[in-house]
Length: 212
Image (cartoon, rainbow, N blue to C red):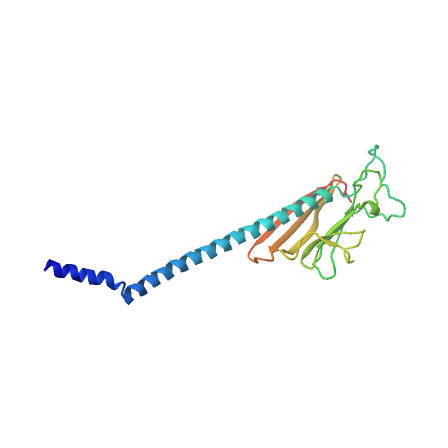
């Protein structure tokens, strides 16, 4: 009897897996592979979303820093005499006020232009790159070139529309007094690679030389 049982076991061991066992094994393997692939895809998407969000945050932080730094100096003219009057380089137009406007295709107050004595030589000159401005145009934040007005072309992009879409940029004077003016600025950026990634900033810039 024992000999017969051993012979049966030997036959089973030589016969391999049954079709049912193979099908079950393949099904389990497919489930495992699908789960791993899904997890890897989700991890990649999450990582990409985090990267896009970090990139947009870096852009909006840089915009806030740049705009606030320059706008806060609008109207400044260097002089050893604190009571000296505003100086102009030869053939330059007096444009020391802060002007808000817009490109014809953009919302109201989506452009600001101003100037200041950046190199501290006592005069403001277009040749020295001392006419500044920022505006919203064609889904980008642009900066002023060669003293162009808000409605003119020829401005350069500060943001890259291949990766970032600017959906809002407004500059509004909140109040003014003998000490200067305060401007509220709003910026909103979207990732062009991941539309769900959005970053918005609202901040105040105090301009001590803008008291009119």
